[in-house]
Length: 310
Ligand code: GLU
Image (spheres, rainbow, N blue to C red):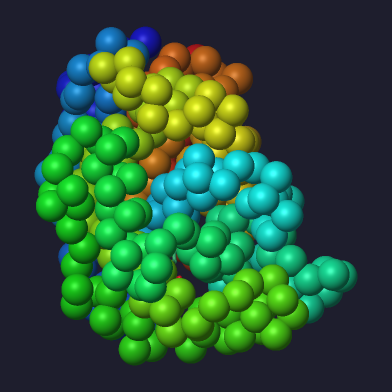
């Protein structure tokens, strides 16, 4: 299936007005400076062609979309048995940064890799020696996926620092998990890597490419297998059940595609589902968020896009 440029332009025009109903994230001070009126979308089609509309070239930080990339990296590096011995695969229905289930689950283990506790546990597993080496290896993994030079995988140091200086809740999750033996290592080092991974810069096209690789069972548009079929399937499944915060159930009903959102307003979606949109990848950016932390106009664009391809 191929989506056309005209379709995407119509979606941006139709959904633009929804941006005023949302709010940009402010809990990371740097993110509060972003213009909430921005809206863009890019699609990597079944035939590998890219189409885009709106603010599709604007750079933004990936935030929680990084959670699927670190998950892919540790799954590829250590295998699913190891990874899922330390983090579960069940949705929570709680807010992304909640500590509640960690205390209730006995023996304690973060319920899935998309909530912050689980994502931090995944970051703690990244291979490497020290924060710099771990982050460099992650950049190398991303460069390999996208078939670009590692120097092109950049992060926004201001956003990373802004989060590093304010992220007491994530520190609390890590200390709690270390106390219970769920993670090992230095909390500040994990926070350093985590805040940088969240601050990695991309645009809608980069997100669409990530979605395309996952929807094409781990293969790039050029046919290179960069993530195993099994791991791509695991990630799509976890995106479906846990990718859109505590609105994952609603998103599954309304959109029905595996998706992962971030508080920057980013959404990656994969065209493999009951809607059978073919092996396409979709990248959305709309920083005005709804109450659950998902891009309000971006989610609307995805809803309309699938309705138009029944
Ligand atoms: N850096 C963010 C945090 O951990 C990511 C949150 C998100 O995008 O959901 O708070």
